[in-house]
Length: 169
Ligand SMILES: Cc1cc2nc3c(=O)[nH]c(=O)nc-3n(C[C@H](O)[C@H](O)[C@H](O)COP(=O)(O)O)c2cc1C
Image (cartoon, rainbow, N blue to C red):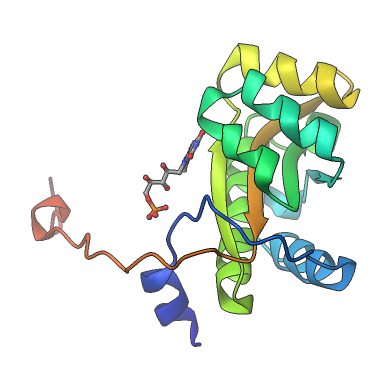
């Protein structure tokens, strides 16, 4: 699959088979994440790989829109290490780009994944800090829930010419 096809056909997948996702694949996804651009090449990302069933089952208590994590084989928490920021505030943007890379890599490999939001919701940030013993200097940004897809989702067309302004607004 070429990059444009991957971008155009990626969809959020929230239902997974019971097939495990092995460590080699997780490393491939995290390698893609760490290939993202970042401000001043600061690369402020950190990750938590979550496979523990009890932990996955508790995620719905932090984000009610992520209860399906309890049925996923694995979830990847993407975080900003604020101590690695050369340009304060940019870490959020860097780790967002990193998270999108992970979603695209998952899709290319044949996995199904979804970005579940943490930042900027204060209660979710604190909830994940408590759940995973994350220090104050680390900002949890997103939880990518993933596995082998139980069903496929069709690509959607979102191109909207009215959003494009030429030369001036
Ligand atoms: C910042 C952000 C937060 C999101 N949070 C959630 C979430 O908590 N739960 C969820 O099921 N999907 C979440 N999503 C996925 C969106 O619902 C999804 O991307 C959107 O509906 C478009 O569908 P698509 O990803 O299939 O193209 C989030 C996406 C983003 C970018």
